[in-house]
Image (cartoon, rainbow, N blue to C red; front, side):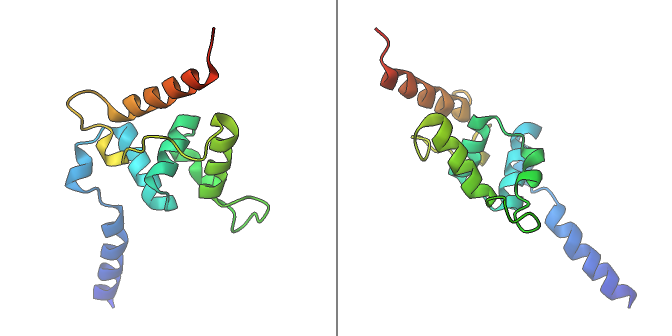
Length: 127
């Protein structure tokens, strides 16, 4: 009986362990990696949520559509907010979360955000 509880505990803690590749990431980016896995989001949806200014630790409140049926599932909610705010369905440049903190030439997520912002400003056309 004791062995079964140890094995059950091992399986529980196995999923909570941080991989060696994630230890090199800053804590802010690691939070987005964990949120992507926990809420089953795609790279594009994580990038959209970050551009919208959502907090990765608070996404659980938004993804409660099982107990609160009036809420949309989290991926659809993020896509709806992004379309409403930026006027397009996805970012033009999608960068995987794990690569955000590893670029030697700067932060690619920040570069992607800047590229998306520049394309938004270019589309508005200020005289």
